[in-house]
Length: 239
Ligand code: GLP
Image (cartoon, rainbow, N blue to C red):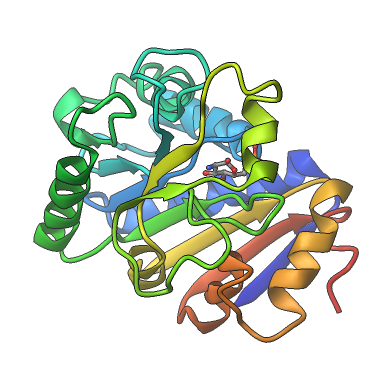
């Protein structure tokens, strides 16, 4: 693992975007998994800008949306798919057939998982995986104690994760559908980003101690090509 610490969110996002751009310039037909959430938003803004300027061409890439809330449909507010379309795919006019995702309203979630696994296998694995980290250490919706051998699956969400999006329980968001830890681990390059003091403790828990399924992000310790990009505040508990 390589750690990169930047002064602030702005420079972290620029650095991450430059890293992704250079990867795609070298391998334009990459399979890239993108995470939703607030952390990578600014990075995606930079990527869109670079794409529009002709600095990088994402047209030959295939994309996976890392995870989705079970119960949130494609165009619903707060769905990962809507966020990724709004922030990245639509501004860059990425072709529909290049975008692969879980449908949170699917009547057969297992079938969605099987199709995703088959697609990833047919591509020979993910080339580049963009990740955030949850307050409980989750990667995608791989909550604490998810097997490190998991492929795509549906999992129950921890209370900390649910409270973030559904504080009153009105929306019945109890499960997530996600790429598995094994597929993240098998990605040729993984980039985890975190910013802000609220992420400092979980970053410390993930990377100061021995790898444990209780903190899913800690699995990146055994990734052969993982990068952790932090801002100063998020890095404060790292030793
Ligand atoms: C969410 C998503 C993850 C995301 C993480 C961090 O619940 N399932 O894909 O990376 O939690 O989110 P944020 O960047 O908003 O802190």
